[in-house]
Amino acid sequence: MHCLTYVLAVLLACLCVIQPGIQAITCTCKGRSQCKNGSCTEEQGACFVLTERNLESYEISVFYGCLAETMGFPGRHPLFCESKSKHQFSKTACCFKDYCNKNLVVPQLEEVTNKSPQNSLAAVEMAIIIASCVAVVLLVSTLVGILIYKRRQKRGKLLPSRSPTIPDDIAALPSDETRTDWSTSGSGAGLPLLVHRTIARQVQLQEVIGKGRYGEVFRGKWRGEDVAVKKFVTRDERSWFREAEIYQTVMLRHDNILGFIAADNKDVGVWTELWLVTEYHENGSLFDYLRSTTINVTSMFKLAGSISSGLAHLHMEIVGTQGKPPIAHRDLKSKNILVKKNGECAIADLGLAVRHDSTTDTIDIPLNNRVGTKRYMAPEVLDDTLNILHFDSFKRADIYSLGLVFWEITRRCDLGGKDLEYQLPYFDCAPDDPSIDAMRSIVCDQKQRPLKEDHWDKYESMSNMWKLMQECWYESGCARLTALRVKKTIGKMQEEEGLKV
Image 1 (cartoon, rainbow, N blue to C red):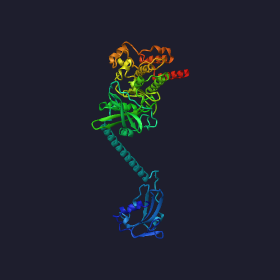
Image 2: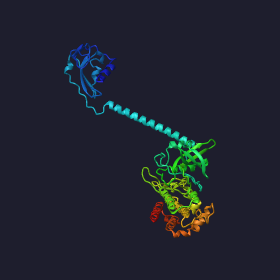
Image 3: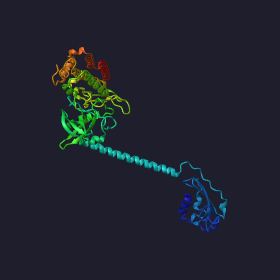
Image 4: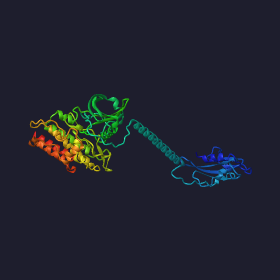
C-alpha cells in the first residue's frame, strides 16, 4: 500500500516518454528495491524524493531513487514529479543532476482526520448492509402479513370487532373445576394460538349437554380432561367471534369467571363448525342447580359471594402494560352462571359483553341498549333511557340483574323448614316468555320487584340479603351499589355468620 502512488504513476506513464534531451543520471537511492550501494543510475531520467503515508497505519516513509525515462512526460517534466498539490498521502520532489536528490527538501504531508478512507468505506458498507437487512425484513413481514390476512379471510376469522344486536336466552354453557395445570398464552385468557388452530382435531365429543339458538353444547375430552364445546352455526359467526374476543381479554382469567381454553373452526364437509372450548362444570348452570337443589345459609353466601366477586373483576379496570379494560356483562342471569364442584360460581357467556377504553372513553361495539334477557333487563333498558355513551350505565344495569339472581338463590335457602320451589324472578306477574312491553309495564310503570318471603324477617342472614337485593334493583341506576361494594357486603355477612356458628 505504501507504494500505491508510485505504481499508479507507472501505469499512467506507460504511454509517456521522457524527451531524448535527458542524459544518464546517478541518484541517491534509499528504501527501494533497485538500490545498490545507496545509489542508482538511469540513462535518461531524474532523481526524486517521495514522502508517502501508509493508508492503514498512517506511518510516513521517505524514499529516494531514480526515475526511468518511461516515467516522464513531457521531457524534463516527469509526470511522477507533478504531485505538488496538497495531499494527505503522498508528495514528490524531483531534480536532474547527479545525487541532487540527496539535498532535496523532503516534502511534508498534511495532517489527516481520525477517519481514514478505509473507515469511511467501512461505515458506508455497514450502512448499506443494515439498510439492506431492514429492507429484507420489511419485505418479508409485509408478505407474511398479507398471507395471514388472506388465510384468515378465507377461513372466516377476519371479522369486524363490532357485534350486532344479539337475541336473548343464550344457551347456558356448563363447565368443570378451574384447571390450573393447563398452559396458557401468558395473558390469563386462554391457550396459545397454535393450540387454537389444532384443538378441534384433538377434542373427542361426548354427549350433548345443552342447546340454544346458536347451536349445541357438548361435553368433550381433551388431553384426558372434560371440556365444554359450544358449537355455533355458520350464520352466527359474528357472535362466535365476539365471544371468543371477549374471553381472550388480557388479565380476564379469574376463579369466578368461566375459564376459556380455545376458539377454533372445523370443516365437516357441508359446512364449517365454529367452536368455543371452555372448562366444564358438571353441576351445570345456577338455574339447573337451584331447580334440583336446596341450599343452606353457608351455601347461599358462597354462591352469592362468588358471583359478586366475578362481576367485580369484570367491572374493574386494571391499569398497566398488561392491564384489563372494564367489562360489562349485559346478560347476567342464572342460566349464564355455572356452579363449580366447590360450591362457588363462574360467570359465563360473555358474547354480549362490552369493553370500555378509558384512554379514549369509547366502547368497542355499536351499542343497542335492548339486549340480553328481557326478564332480567334493568328499568332504564326497558324504557330505553339507558345512557349508551356512559359506560357506568351498563355496569349499573348488571347490578340490577345481579339483585334478581340473589333473589333466586335466597329463595331456595332451606331455613326454618321452608322448602320453597324454585321460581324465576317475576314468576307471579310475568309469563314464561315475556315481551319487552310486558316487562316495561311491570318494572317501570307498576314499579314491581320480586316479593319478599314472610319468614325472611325472622332470620338476620335472610333479612340482610333482602336489604342487599333492594339496594341492587333501585329504579335509579346511580343509587345502586357497585359490584365491589356488593362483594364486600357479602363478605362481611359471611364473617358474621361464621362467628355465630
